[in-house]
Length: 101
Image 1 (cartoon, rainbow, N blue to C red):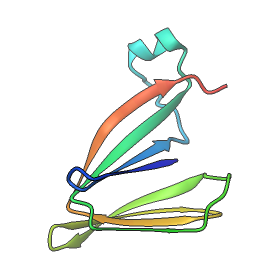
Image 2: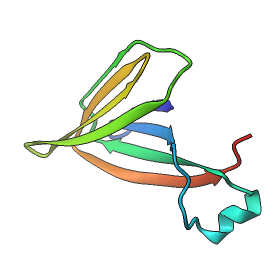
Image 3: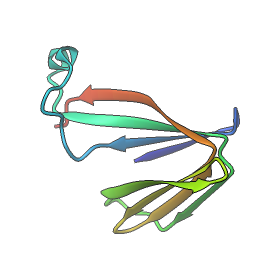
Image 4: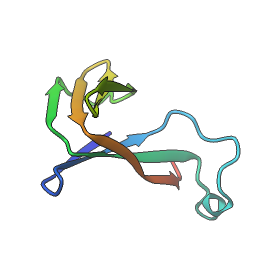
């Protein structure tokens, strides 16, 4: 997992390596012999971020909640950390296949 804080917006990019590979991936992924997927969530109008703990075991669950009042909350929880972020909107900025060795 990678978290990138951008002053434009303000925006937070969250890159996640997905646990499962799709059953029917795009054909272009076969050119790079992809067997894994990363997803970039872009949190727009970010207003709060907290990170509690950190480590090398970054397997996590990601939950997106609608808090009402046009606010979304993203909670990413792993065995060694917990990240909580609030924003006005979320978009999938990128989905990319790659070869995990």
